[in-house]
Image 1 (spheres, one colour):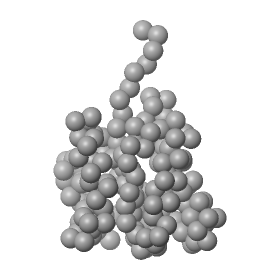
Image 2 (cartoon, rainbow, N blue to C red):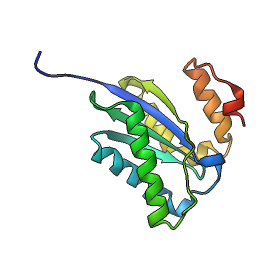
Image 3 (spheres, rainbow, N blue to C red):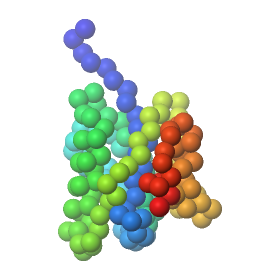
Length: 149
């Protein structure tokens, strides 16, 4: 077969360094749009980007030629640089780690709705509780020292 076909969808979640509440509401939409642009520049599709003052969610469609770790490195480093240069936040950093959870096309609408409702969702649950619930939903074993710290 002359062509490669791949459907690789990931719900990615990552927080600010030390979970600092540093992403001001007035810059969030611009940051989410910028993250979508980084994805596009690197051959990915960001189907949804959102978050709150201390973390981000992205629903990514990756091409077969791009490793997930490379995609996350490009998105996090590019958006961190943008926060330093454009938003005058020289101390801004993303946490080194991230969560990436594979989903199927049947889950896209629900995942997009979940990402778009982050502000409302976090009125009831903080980032740590949310992240642990996602880990459990995907049957991922975790060490609480690294998630609940």
